[in-house]
Image (cartoon, one colour):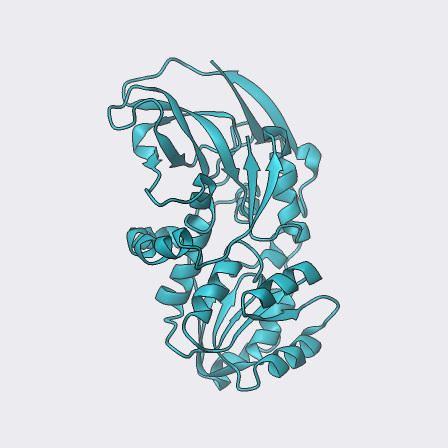
Length: 332
């Protein structure tokens, strides 16, 4: 059986060129004992993948030039030599950026049983949702009544973070760009603030207007101007959960850090980075809490979908243009 997959032909400097992504085809070997063959139906593209393209080991190994790229995917088992995954089983795995994946059975998970569209397990009930929950609850230790600020608030992670924070009863402010995203956040009961065409001082003023008493928690997805403005609006004892800094991912040379890091000292604040995989043992707890809310329609989520394997690189690159509302997905 043939499998089509995307690879990269070089390590990008700055924003990757579309031509860097090559679609190739390979003949899959016969299944070994304990292996499973999956026809993918949904692929996830995520900002963290940009770091894996740089050829440098960070918290995860880099992508290998010429080899299939990897990412979360959902699909159906079409051939199996693993008793736990008979033909027809719907599964989630990390063999994305391809149409057919062949993997050891221990790298697959059965989809949970909630009555939700299967692609939700790549978004609101998958890694992005778990990331939002872990950052707020395990890193920032969010409490009832906390005022919470979230950057990248209309993305896959941020849009769940603002809703989980809203349920705690405090003022929740989301930073986003386009008017469409700002309007969506407002419909969720979140105060929405635009970062567009604002320097740090201007964004600081807008955040103070939205929440004059300041923030107990800042959920960081963006960095840059957003981080600098957030530091100016912290309450004493604030906690910052650093999930990502997408504004820096495509920099050819490192930019200067915020000039106001002293606010951490002045406000006696704590700033902590985290990687969701370090907290994955708590995924059942997250699923128990958030799954019924998604199933019951009490949590809103959105998806931006590109159709066809050929569109996978385009979907990925759109993440850095702010073109997605909610989770960016590829439907095969």
